[in-house]
Length: 287
Image (cartoon, rainbow, N blue to C red; front, side, top):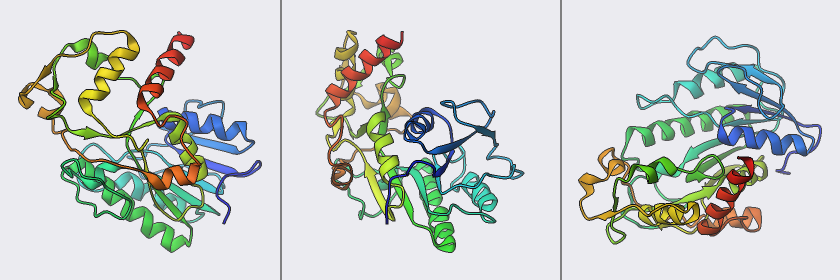
């Protein structure tokens, strides 16, 4: 089955945030007819938009579409995903004619203490955030099985790019954990994520989306400081002094994402230091 969308096909993007806006722009450049949903109904990348509140089950009629991209996160509380359930109920009378793509997270693998994980690895979320994502994957799989449509589940690592660089964390001056103790994190540049979203249309299965070059969280912030010309954050051996670790963001795993590289034929930014520098330069051009 062909995967990439062709000119004249219709895509429905649910969630016009950072990734949704960039995906809409790329699809429109390729002649795809795009409709984007947002809570406010604001225009997104020049595409027609719909105001849809996923926390309100009363939704407007959705337009005909060949592919649906679901980029909206679950609610911030609980361990299920009623937002996905509400949208699927609205789609049931007229599901996508060709395929669905769900953005999930590598957080479903839980804390692996720095070990490698792959698409076939067991999911064992250790947080309510991760369990909500597992619930989201389950309801979308059930819906696509009922519709007899392929579903691509993209388990996405931490997204970075122009306009998505955590420079405030650098400006806080609060310490990071020493590299020998810091958890391993995984990242993906927004351009490579958008390429994955485009090329995964029609894929039936799970795809890890990361640059395949895991770094410790401390390495990431040091590289970001270097790219932006800021001072590196101080290091500490005391985990209780690191805000993210106090908040429970201390999971550690390595995501090789080899299947993604095969799908795309290589990444634009497989080296995060290059990706960060490109992001900083793009921000500078945009003012």
